Amino acid sequence: MSPVIRKRKKKFTISSKYLLLILCGICVALMVFTFRTSLFEGPFKTVAGYVVVPFQKGIAEVGGYFSDRSRELEQLREVLAQNQALQEQVDALTIENNRLQQNQYELNSLRSLYELDQEYSDYEKTGARVIASEADNWFYSFTIDKGEKDGVQVGCNVMAGSGLVGRVVSTGPNYAKVTAIISDTQNVSSTVLATSMNMIVSGDLQSVMSDGTIRFEQLSDPEDEVTVGDKVVTSSISDKYLPGILIGYISSIDTSPNNLTKSGYITPAVDFSHLEEVLVVMDLKQQIQEE
Amino acid sequence: MKKSIVTAFLVFICFLLQTSVCHWFSFGGIVPNLLILLTAASGFMNGEKAGMWTGFACGLLADLFSANGGGAGNTGDMLGFYALLYLLIGYCNGKCNRLFYPEDLKFPLLMITASDLVFNFVCYGVMFFFRARLDILYYLLHIIIPEAVYTIVIAFVFYPLLLLINRRLERSERKSEDQIAQKD
Image (tube, rainbow over all chains, first blue to last red; front, side, top):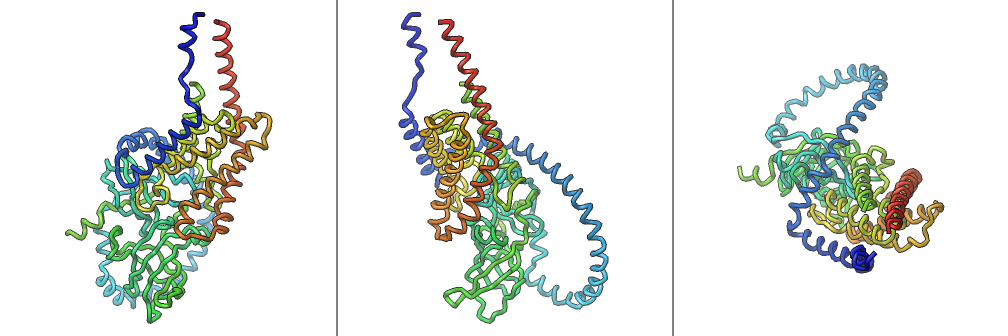
């Protein structure tokens, strides 16, 4: 063979050290650029939305089918056992119901005070399926199968059942990333329903892992009015969350080291380990304030 | 060429498994880290460059679908943190390429464990320690070590599979090289 042809076969290669430097440089540059700007968002999101998300949707659908079937089997056994227990409960509840009806008047006045029922039904919601979770064990966030095309925007609140799950932090054409309120970096301004005192609820990986609770802080309660079991909802002064969405119930209260405020733990109203379908609230906080 | 296409395909599959399937099999909220497994394996099996590219691809995907922007808080769109971390892990594993023999099972498992531990230590350091979550022992015992153990258990199944794919690819590569040599 002639040396000319052989030369053509020689591939262009760079030393691995230089490749390392170049790739590291790219990573650092990406971090710097994407930290505040949205320079590369478009192409990356399109790739993610049309290459990865369809597969995740498929897997979630298959998984949903299997989990439904297995749950049905489990439930059948449970239901038989529960039936008996429930019958006994019905008797007990009938008695309790009579007592509760007497409290109806008080409840109605409280409701009108907080306008809870009205506000809840006012929010326009759309259902979405959880299709993927975080790739590591440090944070609680997930991807849902609704995106910009369905009108989901960054900042939309996400609920499951009647409880707050989190908020949308990033959207693609057909998917959106949601950070849960139990994630370690998240803080929610909230209110204890019984005393309308504001406080900060913050996600805490340590307490979530050990007993499924999240921390609250800066609760001013000089009269010791707040008790274990009180309802905690999002406060009206939060700039990210709509007011009056249930977060959870207080599970323990301590006096903070500063002796002025109280802190403690809240049991979230949502079961974060079995999230499959969530509700995205389409109204944003700012829009509601304008009205 | 064939190898890089197959590796890209593997990265994709592993990412899908990691985000969509793994959490069905989580133990106490802990899922194994397949991306680290793949990055490390690709590194010590095929050298620094392969490790780097695999790590970079894995990390970029993880970044794209992570809502925490490397712990930066509210910006859901910061890219590059995981990419850099996986990239470096792939490179370090690639450096150990010379110590690797396909018959030896201890070394790969050791490398995968070490990679997972380093990855999570860095994650803890950057995203938790700096935000004054100082109870390192708790995080070590409840997240870092369980994840490493779970990853190793998965590696017992997953790694031989990767090895098999790698061997097949190498064989077919050698075959085509032989053919070229014969033509020459």
